[in-house]
Length: 171
Image 1 (cartoon, one colour):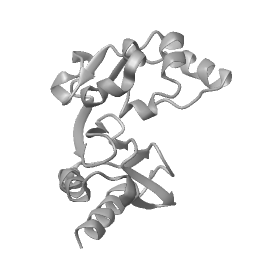
Image 2: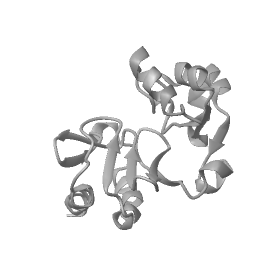
Image 3: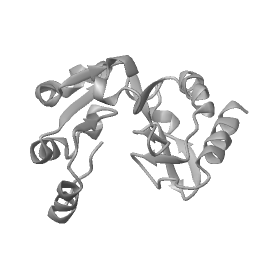
């Protein structure tokens, strides 16, 4: 879900070896993907359930995935896909990035108060019960950090904040 990137940030990325893959959680987070794909000669992976919403932008996508098994071999063992249902997309993936032990959410989980997590507003959810059900299995993911498409990332207390979110949703 790449954000707009300055020339200085792109230069720093190139100095570190660039990027081989861009993972998207939805068409809504396409953002700077075209420029980053060109700059880094990176491949793009996007959720198959969002394919129609990509329209002409579908040509940017190299791999459509529904699960971890659909990711290219280079990402096996490095990225786990966790499908989340009931949000504004039919299925929005959350990614567990194994190297940094980080759980990445697109739109569904967010943070507008530092250190605390919340959901996309109920008015934008298709099925709140399905959201809660699909988030439950993530309670056991050994995330040390939570990276968010909207709000403040959590680099400390991530598991505790996620457990608190789930406890509040299930109450």
